[in-house]
Length: 86
Image (cartoon, rainbow, N blue to C red; front, side, top):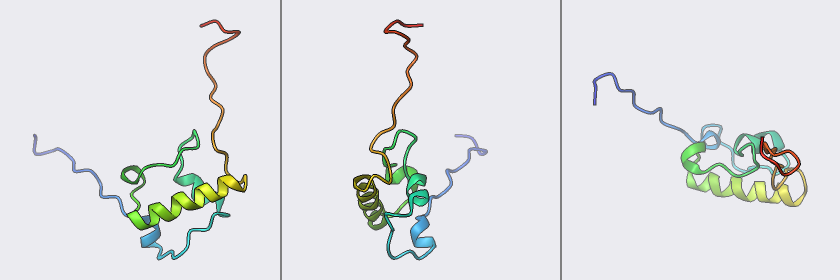
């Protein structure tokens, strides 16, 4: 390994940093930051959340899905046209 290899930047829990006690399921903009473009919840290693806030975040996203504030999935646009490949 060379001397110039960069160390990966340490990810910190955004909720701990802002001292958030409760993750609101109605705050859709915050929830979408922690979701993929397909509507899946990002894992802890990607989002950088601590275990406690990741659990609260997952529950808030699931609650928002039930209330139809956030979609369960997003339709995928494929390269197929009329059942034929391009």
